[in-house]
Structure formats: structure tokens, C-alpha cells
Length: 286
Image 1 (spheres, rainbow, N blue to C red):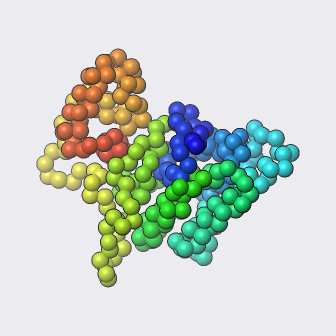
Image 2 (cartoon, helix red, strand yellow):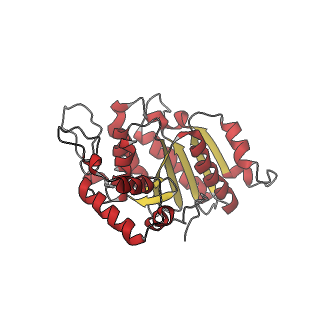
């Protein structure tokens, strides 16, 4: 079984996925989100959206405008809740409450004979609460377990204009799949819960930095990014924009072999090994 994301340029995926969707601004968020939910309505899926900065009624009207609202199943198909009310039910974030909330929605969808639970949630609510970072990562790992091997797709949405690079790097740890600029990327640095760095007893909460993903250059030596040639910078920019090597070759009127060579040189100069790492560095240097 495969699932259509409904997002132009995104291939079908498999149920059981927990995807980190990175976007810039409300326009790109809406393009991803409404395509995702409208496809779910067409496919007869149970759809859940936890929204951050809009009224649920207005979002429901926009999502449903392309569909016949007289169908009796339609009213049961789409749930839209405020993210703050779902994630912060007791005034602060609780892993137990939130995992129970999502597990219950998944069970309800199965009992109602929906083929799939399609859920999306904006994650802006976590930004003012760095002291809750440990619980946040426990929660993200729990979501992986809730979704795994289940008829469900969860998409956590992060606005690059609001999330700092350090948070972005940390977020990648708990997501095996990353949706960025029109591509679903495999994340080689995804960690399972037992692999998370343990916090020392009595120490202050940390953001659990990912040692294997690049952070902004702080050394006294020249930034390796500055060693890239103009051609290598252009290829890096296009990789960060979500283009495949074939697309880049066509766009720059180069041979695929030349693009591959440029990318190999970039990886060597920056001491990285994946497109996700290169995308993070490109975002840091924009």
C-alpha cells in the first residue's frame, strides 16, 4: 500500500511514516498543508490538523470548499484543533497527554473504518519552551512508535523563518524522513530513542545537539564553505532547493557527470556525506 501526499512533486510514500516538513512562511505552509489534507479527503482518509495561528472554522471552510459538504461522511472526516489546546492541555507540554491524544485519534480512525489517519501539526508552540526540550524529543520518538506499521502518516511542520538553525538540526534527529523544497529526503542521522544522548543527572536540560550534523562555523580557521567555487556553490544552492542531480544538470546546462563531480568535491571540502547535511549548511549560509 502507498499513500499519495497530494503535494506536487512528491512521490507516493508508505503508511507508518513520521515526516518532518520544513517550510518558509505561511504561503508555503498553506501550499503543503492544504494539498495534503485535500488529497486525504479525496482518498477517504481521516484527516487531523493541529493549527497554530488561524481559526479552525476558516481552515475547515478552505479545505472543504472543493468538496461536497452534503456527504454525511465528510463531517466526520476532518478534525481541526488548535495546536496549543492539543499540545498544552494542562498549560504545559505533557508527553503522556499528547501521545494519548494521538493514539486515541488513530484508534478512532480505525474503528470508524477510515483507511488511513492523515495528521499534520504546526510545531511553533514548542519555540518559547526550550526548557521542555527533553520531553519534546521523547514525544517525537513516541510518535515514531505510535505511527510505525500503522495505517497513518504524521507530518510535523516547522517554519524555517521562526525556528533557529540549532533547533532545526536537533529536530532532524527524531525524523527519518524530511520534506524540504519539494523532496522527501532520507535522513541518515535519524536516531532511535535508545540512541539519544543521555542527560547527566542534575545537569541543566540540553538541546541534545547532533554531533554528526553541521552547526554554524565558529572556529578560528577559515570557514570551509568559503572554499567552494562558484559552480560548487550554485550546485549546493540547488541541492538545498530540492532539485535532483538530473534536474540540476538540466537547469545549469551541464552533464550529469559534471554535477556529480561538483557534488563530490563539495562533500569532500565540507567533510559531509549527505544531501541533508549539505542542505543544513546551505541554510546556515543564506
